[in-house]
Image (cartoon, rainbow, N blue to C red):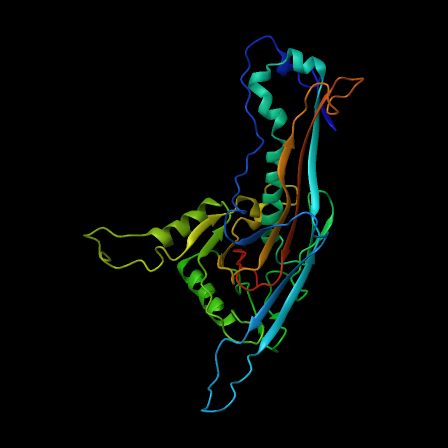
Length: 338
């Protein structure tokens, strides 16, 4: 556990006026609020595992002749995924001298924003399901090997996902992984039209309403041009409607282009894709068991170490993430790879 003391952080108790800035809570809830992940609250007392499952019915009714019995509807169990929550946290302690001598009013947030750091970890873990989404496992920030395959035992983004009630397959990674452009977007739309199937192999008319990218300026600016481009009244194309306006909501996920530790990974800077925020869309699940929280120390309580008089602060969160199927979200790595 890290301890904040006067020897390690002399500026915090300096006599002169020092202006501090803080780097904690630096990541907004871009992933959690994107609509790509379907969020649920995991209630206490409901066990230590949760099963995410899909269930399909055939798309169309059948003819019923006069006086005849109606056909029985066909239902199909899809893939299931069992997840268990993992708890994350950080602790810190503040010495007696630090509390008495430091510029407490100016830097208290640096000591107590441990809950925000847990929220940042959620963003990292959610986004890394896309970052490492062409593999079935990845090594996370803690050095643990995390299984991230879907219910069919393939990577989230794959060229031949299987179905439980049909021999058909579908793909959700764009061939040749082009950078985002109007042509590439149309190619991804065509892929989605032809590869969005239920488990009986029937085509599903699913609305993809999200275009997501990294925070790479060129990629983001290209998307902005596609979605928002207009022409002057005197321009050759004046009056021509931009078919992409209001078709997609642009979601920027800055942590896609990072490694397991959250450091910059420029090899993933051009990642982009489409997703559906509808209930039947992307089946990326996030179950929150314990919301990010911070417990502050108080004098003469068990958060004060008797012999050292250190005050202890802690941040905690507990949650589970699972990608049931690849349907409803697609990817291009933007690197031109086959």
